[in-house]
Structures are given as structure tokens and as C-alpha cells.
Image (tube, rainbow, N blue to C red):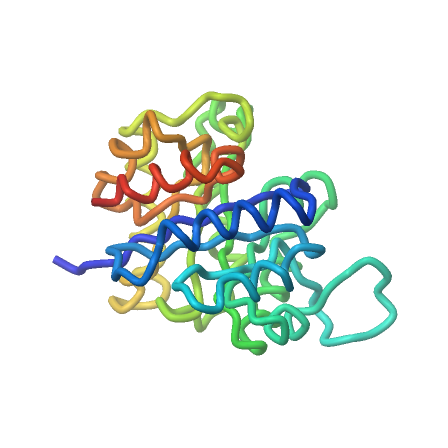
Length: 251
């Protein structure tokens, strides 16, 4: 059986001052210590905290990532940040196509696709998010929605090295609702099959994260599922104890 190294990723969203953000990174660095753990740990702070987070994490295995990037390398794009800038800071990952970006900024699959390729060109691992809304689930369209997002959001040469997929049921983000283990595994298995059908057997190594209100109380059950390779954590990643407990659940 193929072994995929779990990835526990924290999406801080628009949260964190310099004071509390650096304290959170430092707390995670201390927990990681110099030991070899059976998982990869990643935090994606707001852009304002990236430099400080990278500097604090240099002596540890903690990975730092961005929450978005532009499709262009540079230019007149006020308020945006390029993949090259993230890489230059020392980031290794970038979250793309998060449901909040798709909904609040009208990001299309085509735009996410373009951003993904830009991220790869800058040496970043793209965490491409897919997921259905509550109405799409209620009308039985979940797998159709996921299939289209995978086909249109991910460029044709994705590999286990440059891409992570995050399944985030939109109806479970920030609501306290969580997909049942059966619901989560069904979609993750479908994503796995879709990736292999499109990219070949090597795509079985692409990690798929669950991103719908994972927390310490449900992490062990979700992370034990055959096709769940980690989590994209929102609110719980803002508390060092909770985030670390989730990471420990990988065992």
C-alpha cells in the first residue's frame, strides 16, 4: 500500500497581529523541536506575517506558505502578491482556489489553473482547493462539481511533488458542521480516482487534505480514513495546542 506522508496545514485567513502571530509560530517551533515526526506541518499566515514566520521557523521543520498569489510575475496589480515574492520570502506552499476566494472574489477554475501553474514556476507547491456548496450537496451534485473543479482548476502536469488537493465542503467551513467519515471518504476516494484517471498511477501519491472544520475532537477519526492525507485547518490552527493535537492525531 502506498504511504503518503500526512500534511497538516493551518490557514490563518485574515487573522494575526505581529505579536500573537509570532508567538503562535514560536510555540509550534518549540513543539516540533529537532525530532523527526511522521507528518509535515505547515502554516499559512497573512502576507504581513510571512517574513517573521519564515525567520522564526528556519531552525525547524515548520513549513510556511501563502494564502494566494497572482498569475503575473510582477506588474501594476495593487494589493496582490506574486508567487515569486512568496518563494523569495522562503515560502514553500501556497493555497489556491479556496472557497472564500472563489465566492468573495469570483475566482474561476480557469484563474485557479493559471495561478497553479504560476506557483509551480516559482517552485511552490500548490494546495488546490475544491468543494461543493450546501445547495450542490443537497441536490446530489457533489461529485459532478468536484469532477469539474479537478478537471478545470489543475493543470495537466500535476504530480505528487508540485500539487496537494484540499477537499473543503463549503457547507462545513466555519459552521461547526463536519462531513461524516463516510461522506469525507466517499469524496476523497472519488478525487483520488479522478487524479489517477487523469494523470496516471503516480497521481496516487498526490496528498488530499480534508478542509471542513477539522478539530481535535474529530481529527483522529478523519485522519484514519484511507484517502485522507491530512487537513487544511482554519480556526483550530490559531490555537497552538489545538493545532498540535490535530497533528499528533496523524499517528
